[in-house]
Length: 274
Image (cartoon, rainbow, N blue to C red; front, side):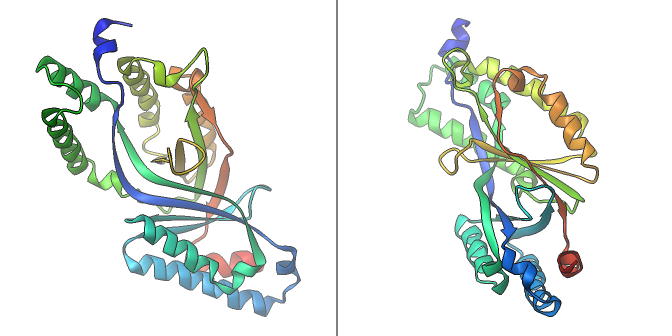
């Protein structure tokens, strides 16, 4: 560890945007015993719910049919405020169909953009001026940096979900072990590793849309990752390649993966009536 690395402030800056809630459901056995007419009526309510969410204009709710046994359905909500996410959650629970499904998993987070490069640059400049971390002058300079980044990255903070055919969602952590600990590595080392990690993602930018959300203090993991693509093979390719970079190979810990197919409002009834 160099003296410059050890003396720099170690906590990277972040900027936050839209709030997110992932909800996963499995149908109860009683659902399958219902007649087609009853199912159609309740599924039309789901379609209306999705249209109402779209018309509200304060975020999105996307609906996915999950592949595999972990869930049957997944709703992903993005909203400007956390209470709006909760209102969407409650509105969904009040639909008549809700008595026929069981929530198997949920994940609450906020869209996050990490600013490792800006952080190191800013901290070095403030260090050269002799400013102490958390002093009035330091805090003013940090707020100026954050505001400029918010303005520059405004569209990315909205966490807009594209209508791609497939989604892959998973939570992840950075390892905090006795031997390898991401958070005890110097900030300049973490910046270097995150830069290399980001280069992989940029190579897939044309075929994969990515949303990273932070969940430290909000849920059981540190980040949630949403990948959107028309070809699910790309999920395997990008995650496989990223696992070879240092940030993931040494410090990455991955949770449960959910892969689903996007279901537009007008396709809910045809898909689920069967």
